[in-house]
Structures are given as C-alpha cells and as structure tokens.
Image 1 (cartoon, rainbow, N blue to C red):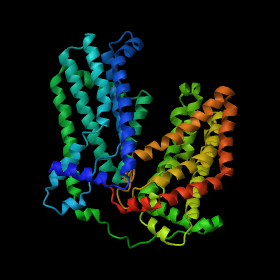
Image 2: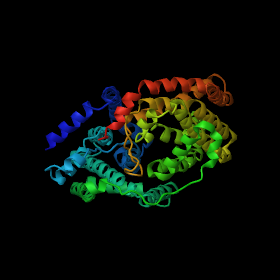
Image 3: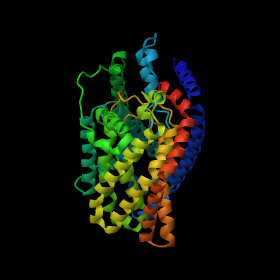
Length: 494
C-alpha cells in the first residue's frame, strides 16, 4: 500500500498545472540544501575548536549542552513557520478498502524523511566525532549523545506536527502555548529560571547513563501515538464537510466608497479578512509582529549593525504586504474564474489589492512611530522602509502573484494554514527583504547613514509615481498566465 501512496503522489506531481515551475524550483532547492548541508557540516567540524577558543577553561563538550535547549526552541519555531507538513488527498482513499491506520502511519512516517530532520545531525555528528578524537568523551558516550540528538529531532518533528494539526486549530490553545514559550524565554533572559541549564544537565546525565536514551525515544513514541490518535479521531469525511453558517454578520463599509471604482473590490477583501479565520489570523499576526523590533532595539550589540535595522523596518511595516500579498490571487481562487467571466477590468481588481496593501503599510508605519524611543535614526529608517514597501514591494508582491496557481480553501485549517503555500512563497521574501538592505548598505558605505535612509525612501517615492505604468505591465502578466492560473485553481492541492 505504501508503494501505491508513493505512486499516487508522483502522478499528482507530474500532472500538476505547475509541474514545470515545481521542477525548476525543486532543483534550486536541492542546490540550496546541498549548500546548507556543507555549511552545517563545516560548522560541526569547527564547532569544537570555536568553543575551545571561546571558553578556554571549560570542556567544549560540556559547553555545547547548555545550548541544546535554545537549539530545541529555535528549531521548533523555525519548523512551525517554515516547514510544510506532509499531506495526501485523503477523500479518495476514505471511500476505498484501505485501513485508516495505514494512511495515518504513512503520513506520520513520511514526516521523518524531511531535510529539516537532518539540520541538527549535520552539526551534532561531526562535533561528537571531533570530541571523541580529542578524548573529551568516550566512544560509548559520543554514541549515546548522538542517539539522544536523534531522539530530540524526532521529538521536535512530532511536536511540530501536533501543534500544527491540533493546537493551531484553536486560537485560545495556541495563544496559551505561545504564552508559555514567551514566559520561559523571559525567565531565561532575566536569569530567574534557566531551563537551558537543566536541559544541559539532563543531556550530560544521558551521556553518563546511556540507557536513559530509551526515555527520549519513548517520549518521541508517545508524541507519535498522540499524533496518531488525533489524526484517527479526525479522519472522517464528515470532518471534511463544514455546515453552512446560518448567522450572517453585516458591517457598514460605506467609508470605502471614497476609493471610487475599486471600492467594491476593497469591500470584498475586507469582508474576506473579517469573515474567514485564516486571513484574519494573518491580520492578527501583522499586529503582533509590530513588537518584533523590541527583540533587537533593546540589544546594544545591534547598534554596530545599522543595516539590520533596515531588515526590521521592512519586516515590521511590510509584514501584512508579505503575508497577505504572497497569496494574491489565491485568496479569491473560489471565484477567480467568475472575475474573468464578467465585465470586470483586471486592472481595477489589481488596483484594489494595491490599495489594500498600501493602506496596511501606512498604518503599520504610523504604528511603528513609538520606536523613536530608541533613537531618531530608528524612526527615520522605519518610515523610509514604509515608503519602500509602498512604492516597490507592493508591486513586487503583486507581480509574483501572477505565477500563483495553488488554490486556497478558506474553510480549511483556520490558523497557520499552509495550504496554497510552497517554497515559492517563502523565496519571494528574499528580494522583498534583502534588496532594500543591499540598497541601503551600498549608499551607506559610499556616503553616510542619513543619506542612505533618505535614498531608500526616495526610491519608494519614485516607484510610487511610476506605479500606474508598472501596474499596466503586471496586468499583462496576469492576462498572459490567466488560463494556467484558472486551471491550477481547479485542482485540489494535495
């Protein structure tokens, strides 16, 4: 049966409307994966020497245990926001003579074969080998430590699976979980309770008593069982069918009439955000990430890296542009064919998206003004980044949308739903975030910080004046690829 599942996914991939784009993208990702693998292996080889130099009076093998807890949290958060869980189209299988447990075991085991599960091992294995060659640990202790890292990787994998599939479906549960994480980080930061210290001591205890590795694997097995039970309880056709709501909320959106001919489209977008949990969660996350700067502005070490403040400014003022804009026009995939079938100018449709994204960047830019507490340079950089987001990044994200072919079902997985998201959506973030940093840094090295900030904002204003010209070019791209887009929206994402 596993062979049939693999064959099904292969046929689903080659028959997809975006197969050409997917192959090219996967080849690029293979290159990135190879580069990261070599980089991580290099870090693992030299990590012992780095710790030996940084902490000359301590055993590097003991020092690294203090960072295991930090690595655990960071990797778990990275996976939560980046990793896409393995899924299959179960509707067709549930009506066949296939045991549900076979489907569930396939999905859970498939999640183990992910590049993310190798990240920690690329560093841990060479580090343990070097530590053994330096006689810091015995062969048995190094083996026990590597096995414990493998068990922790499995724990991270199935914890992430459980959080995405269970907790994120309920905003209150997820908020409670995030509150616990924030409290733990706060206790660690203010030296009230160091959880990383106790985790390090636990890892050393495992090294001294290798039999305790079985406890780690047992906990990973428990998480596997919990995921199995959750999926089993929800693996029914009835759970895939959502009853229609009988109550309809009405909202007065007459104020949008000032936008003229694009007002009806803006009203639809606002209703879409308000009435559907996934886009509403995107809006909520944009508000939450306004506090992102507090992580870095309060750390004096970043004062020596002013270019990093540009990244923060672009991120804080443009988070909604990035998170919401990357799924244009997939948000409207359910009725995108109707838009083309009616006498609706595509240019007006896209202009409404531009207006919505521009409004979000203005609001977030104004909301970031209190950061002036950390210096006037922070305020000017944030405002310049807001102008750059409005002038340049809105157009970039709109153009990238002409290549979107994946449908989004707004009724599925309301919070942190990654349906319709692929590596392409994440890759779009690189030019959005890195190009303004590069522009600012080049001007900064030639002149000074003030001129670089003015230059970044001036580029945004320049593109704002050229917006109508670029929108016309973007419309041509949407028209050129509209049939491929419509065909892609007809397909159910697996």
